[in-house]
Length: 315
Length: 315
Image 1 (tube, rainbow over the protein chains, first blue to last red):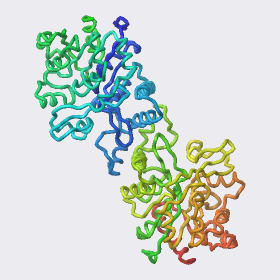
Image 2: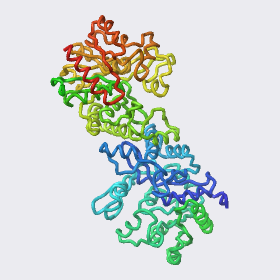
Image 3: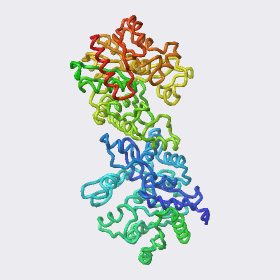
Image 4: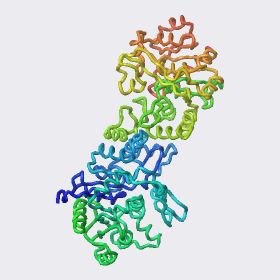
């Protein structure tokens, strides 16, 4: 299975969980057979820098420099610039490491020089020696706002500054009337043989990608497999469980399967949720269950392999 | 002499040597009696950041955070962002420390928000708890180019990237047709009782200030004392001696006195150059000689005191 039959795989990813499965896929597939389309709804500007947290998490993870414990930033990074910013009275709530800052400086420079975010991401990937293509979902602005009982918050303000504390009532996607998927992302979907929806937060990482015009229609024509980010009733990382409960939904893998009903043909449950398989199949999807935890890097290729095998079985 | 008779002192300064004497003056004078006007001819843009090396050296020195050995940057700073930029293939010839970077990010942000460089410098001074006013010589662009046998080089390219290696044939001051001194700098000179030209490089640190329209005329009406940056035939720091020799001039304190002839009423020699006093006085200036080395911080107030006493004697 070293080339997985030469099939072209597109992975949709947000931050940590998505990056880990993308890394597993990258360890299995020839580089020219894998494209990762990454959520940019969390992107923001701080201190004049253009910051793309999910793109960075995917790039750093594929480059092997991601911090394994934190799930963001670069392993072993220091925070001396941030400390100095704090002592200068500047906004310092977003944890920018000193090495991480180099990526933001470079991205910002290249964007100002007129490159698209897609071109910048390819350039950063090249410089970080990341072989598969890592594409932003769009070169246009589509910003996720978290609607809360305290009012709407830009995603990073909710996520980092407010530590996901405000109660969530919904989401708004600023720019969704006009934002288009990038030509490169559309092209990758046009030539894909299978799409993997990584175990990212469906509400704030995958939905922004799916809301871009044309993406859902393209996915409907492709074998698409989603991997549950909820294991045993809780999210591996991040605020997904809390969000689901606050929205009056269940924090369960079955709820995630419902979310992707009509879109994903196959749904991967963690083995601890194997008993949900029947209920998933009632939704009209094929179900598979196996160990999906990928905190350890060496687990990633194995999970990716089982996901691809499952996808192969539903082609 | 703790208030030096309430007189208002303006110091003209470039980088390290100027910053050290300004620091000595700041240790002696009430904060509202001292204004430091700083060369901005070395300012440049890198990675989208607005960098003002001399302003930073003066601010860091007065704030007590300057690196005492290097003469630039912040003591104990790290260079992790720079290392990451280098590994990303970005320009990394200018040594930006991680903590130093916070200053550049803040300055760039405030300038983009519409503040003048003067306002930004006051704001940075306030945040760094620097009490005397530190003013850029101008809010306009006046950029020093070093003319060399290899062609013209922007100052920082010559100074840092090329390590002052190319032979100097002259200087060009881009923007000098239109650059004006800032209203704040003009106002400080209007109300000054004495002007101290710090031991900075006259060719590339002081001359840009003097070239701004009106400054020389104002200085001509004020008691002005210059302190020699050349001690025993060599510059304490930087390329001044090399520049003078390449221009066919002598690397001596007397040559510096000649440079300021007609402008400075008094000239301070280091004690090792005491025998030049008579020759300096032949130029029509009063001369004084005493130890002027200020590498150790505790020497600075003593040197400043002797400079002020000398200035007092020629009022």
